[in-house]
Length: 278
Image 1 (cartoon, rainbow, N blue to C red):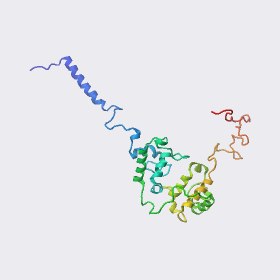
Image 2: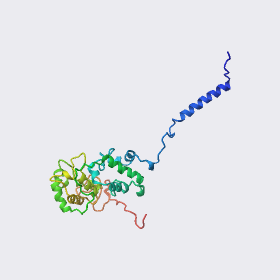
Image 3: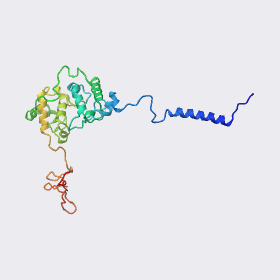
């Protein structure tokens, strides 16, 4: 029998070949190595779930409801707004609110095609042609100005039973004339809430108010009345503890200077620089 030739060079070559094959095989699983699917640029993503999850769910909820902003999955809301309105809101945002611009043409990050995907996806998932039972909703935007004077009467007849006298809160619902609340919502947001209600709460849509459905003009009047309650400077600018005159004890109401509690002095608060612009 002939013994195999296990010379040292042959063994080293064989081991080197084995290690090379193992290394090449292992490289396919290294972190950062491109997978079998191509990597898409952000502007190429056209999947609704991905686009909605990355751009909308933080405010409107993971499934279009349960977030801090309007419930997009509410069929009544979907019946109120048309495609053009949804597209305009996504494109340009809503000034004075936390709704930003999303279209690249307006300074956002989404292409027109991606906005179309979002609009189409919301319609196919959340719109329901039978949601209103054949009733035409009031227009999304008012066709005529509202009257705050008339709105006070509409509020008393249709809203006070839940929100209390003067809108300051009742046994069913809280205050709707709170300055901080009114400072956070626009007139259009108030109108939308009155029309579609607030899903998951006792707030009904415009059809189910007592003593009867609200007309488009009544809605405009109530919004005008609520807007008239909005303070010029919402919120409390100073510390919550106030003196007898309703002014923070750290402030002198007459001179707006800081009070020095140790020495009793009143060093003035520096004002803005004068004599030029920055």
